[in-house]
Length: 203
Image (tube, rainbow, N blue to C red; front, side):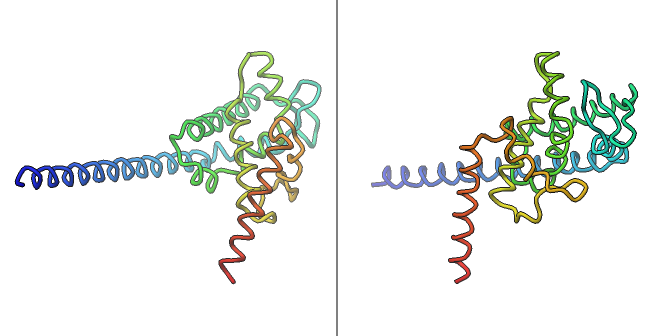
């Protein structure tokens, strides 16, 4: 009888230990996510990053060159380097999300706009660079795709990512490089299901 009691106690101690370990892992992961998100947020809100994003948003890609949208003049080497540096930052962010190192919901709430806007402005540039180098901007594309799906499924349409007053997400819905017709249909179906569920909860 004592051995049975000892076995039961041992089982409870083991279960509590496992539960405590799982909780510690979750807390550590939450802390890591918070620290990582904070550092990335500061990085993307720095004056250098803001300047690079303004440069990207005010550019066009045509005839194999990045140009100023207003003047049509080609970006200088320094400016082109700033564009590359910003894409590298977004690439890193996308890699963190894709590999589960940064919580997807947190990443989308904080960073869903810049990757979509950058792809909208530089999609052709990214593809051409990838054609030249073999790989370029894969996680920029991946993050833009995740962001569009997330916004379709969870965000009111009026709050979708915009650029100069234009709804960028709506403009990219038919871009086959991001969402296939099937993926788009699934995202809108999830949106409808969530909408119905929320209405029923309110009633």
